Length: 379
Image 1 (tube, one colour):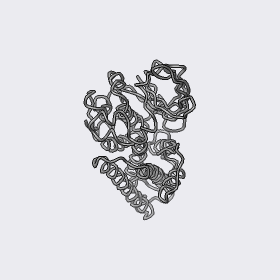
Image 2: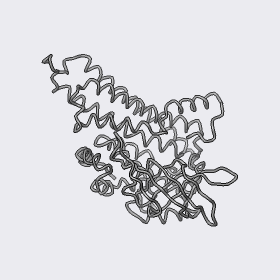
Image 3: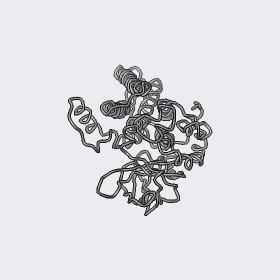
Image 4: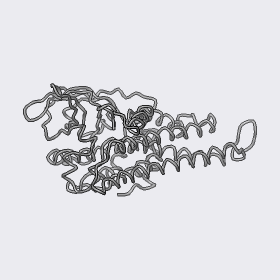
């Protein structure tokens, strides 16, 4: 599997059209399929590449050098192949028969699952279904009705769902993250998995597959993957800013911006801040990988620290983009300029619930001093 420079350049060229379409162009999905990206985390027994989980992170970071929205969407398609590998063997046999396997996963349990013989009747409406316009399957979070509260993730063929076109936003437009509506669809038990087992890394797929990649807890996996488009975008903005310094002549002053020390200071500051974020990412993934390689379970404190690291990466990447944007002049705000699109996309991206910086700092701090946290906390 290889993400080429040509692939990334094509994403940059298509970024404006993807934004106008409010979904990925068909050729982008075709290129991603041909590259092997969408099979990266699918188990080898089902024809996938079964790569170590951290490998996806660098690929998605690099894709963002072409288009933030595309990196986000392709990254989540790939991640959702990994999530599907956590279901039962029977569910995987059904789902992975479709290639490319494209399964959006609005995880928030905004639907209900009523127990029925052999499974559940699932109903509800889910927002933020990234990539739903090209989907052939969908995974949704639902609360199981009854006396004992529980939440499951249910896997359904896309024909069981209806898409509501609501994705009219000022950023991340190419993700096509429309709403999904499901009405009383039967989901057999083998196509469900408990959310608490996903969080802890104790799923059917964790015991089915030999690779410890399938024992990664879901929240750190999701959070770190979702942070990569922000980091990659900040890197690209820094590259664009550096190139612009040498050629931009400041209006009314008739001097090149590169001759202004403050402009060079901002570039140097951006580079070292981004390097620190890459170090934080490496340390975080190394900690989890080391734990799993040793055969241990990733504890809740480590999971919280991983989510905090992801939130920090997004928060700081957004700040780096902001400080370079404000030193780039008014011309970068033309709608065909990649810097303004980068800013809009990362602003929207950072609103994902997993990056709630106040919440995760509080959770991590509470765990640090031995306090209890909510059983519903996203860790």
